[in-house]
Length: 174
Image (cartoon, rainbow, N blue to C red):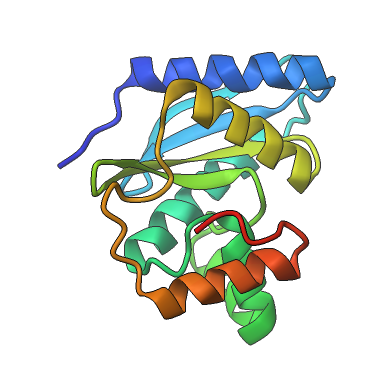
């Protein structure tokens, strides 16, 4: 089983923090393992008091949904998928997990090879700002948000890319 180590999470947190300070947006950053258990959490000075809980919940949600299906590569896709199908179910899932289900940008899975190793969540800016910070940090530390040998069916990739286009991000993720 692929594992994330705290030292790896520290590098990601530092990279997010540097980008957040450059953008003038203090945030909280959480990293969970593949089962959604917290590995690392940091709330930057001046980040909102609730942002740490939201970051952890974003990471938990991505780990849970990515474990279930390749249809959920990040929080933006999860959010749009539920908007299109059953928004009430998303509220129910949040209630059933004591608020651990939160979907938004700034969250994605972390793969080592073809194995899900965990997920991260960033919270404190807008969804777009959280996404920019997280993508910047992920690129710096070399974390993959897709399997090394992506076996996602083409129809699923087309659906995911349509969701990205629908939320204004273009066809750039799969």
